Image (tube, rainbow, N blue to C red; front, side):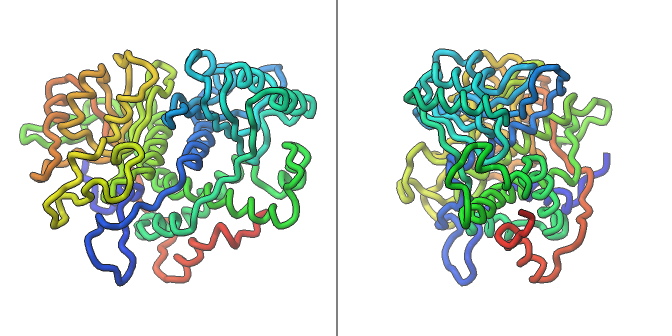
Length: 449
């Protein structure tokens, strides 16, 4: 297999969070505060993305229900589970069955207003609150909606429509990092529009949303604000997803005699490319939540033949850490104190908060190669298959090294797949400032609805 060009490598790196220093600013990049969406917005993004989980659609004579993604968040602010409607079971019901006894006090982020079945399970499980997006509900049957509302009204469990919002400075930072030779404003706009269409976000939905949800105050200028806010969130997703849509593959890798990691041309690619694609985008979304000033890493662990997500994590300083409590410098910064002893890695976070102990058939999807600090922990957990979002490079002599993962690959302790670009051609080069400006304003100025 031919060596990938630097342009193709840039495609793989294009969704990895990196700091940006404002024009005219001085000092190290590590001093800049992180720019990211709120955790609540992230949880709702993940719930919505779970609707895209690749499952075989089942034909049924039962009443029509929209597919729903769901994320349960523990009172400790850790994600307990993420799932979706599949195998004939509603998304909420799947979590209820698989994680009984752990649900009381959870916040629940559902991509769509739940039906009466899910509502009664949520009420009985004593979750603290249920949030749903202002898109078509799980069922638009008026009787279903009335029964669900009655269940919540006569319980201590609150339900609220969740209007997401991504600050413009967050979108600006993401746009500034886009490799214009690969990803153009047209690519992002097309991806965003396709996602909006899948959500059913249209003028026709706006006309009936007030009555369908129901949402009495959804009128007048609020409609315009909700439209802009929702599109800003979908655009955030599109910036992560569009580079992947250029085409990626997940070949198995091997170690050469000179210790380079290269694709194994005699082996098959990862057996389920659709799941790998979905989970890698999921992991890249998590990577954007880091408070590490230099590098974001996301990790997702799945288990089972029809995989269930059992854990997720991103790298960063200890929970609730405040700016200034820990050093922020990395190898490239001139500072005596470095961040490395204080940053919890994405793989470590995922392993510590998993909802099952046995990971013998688990698969780890991670945006960057596991370092020598993480590799032994992954091995101990029982995970034997890893899918990595970037190439495993030669260690450069800094604080982090990547020798153990190579050793595990060589000895057959772990099977490793590595994401590689298959296409890089952009739809149209964004060479002029006006085109870039149009991307930044595409959400707020859109007249789609």
